[in-house]
Length: 256
Image (tube, rainbow, N blue to C red; front, side, top):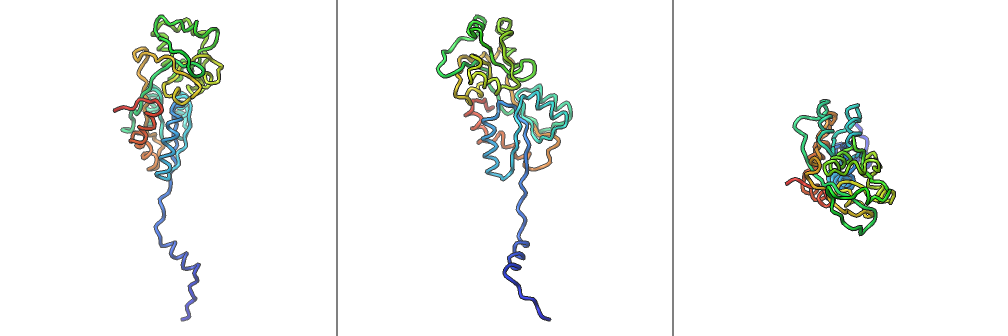
């Protein structure tokens, strides 16, 4: 029998076919509260570099994200800025049992446009309406978005809401509310402490008392549509040391 000569190209092909196939990279789709953007982008980039998995993140108000998930939007992980919106997703049967955890906390602050604004005492006697000087108080939507809900609760608790209600400029999420103050379109705003860290053109002039609003808690959970190992790996990475450091550096409260 005459054998055909083995060409170098054929030999390389045979060798390649004998090698084990590399692990396939997974795509992790995350729906996350807008206030998480700066820190979570960093966490995702580090996770991608370490694992090869791709993380795709959609940021918006927690209320909008929860409604999208319930209506069938494809997502693997949900990180809310409030317990109640995670509750709604869980009631709809879309949270994988045993995966929900409270991963972060935050503070609520009053910010002013620019750098170097004078600090103020925030309390029942604060003339917040007078401070606005006819301008607007920038907040996330006060009846739907967590940051707006916390802000309204704090103002009501301190007796300040009736005097400023008509001056509130409401935005679809907290980062949009932050942008209005950073640009100077509103002289003051109420956002999370972490948002103020992420923006150079605002100054924190007061921190609302913790007992003036419900605790600010960020629950995260794996959703029932998640099918890849990368999804669970990223959820676990959210509470690992590098992620804790990134969140703490951006002003979040990391549970001990």
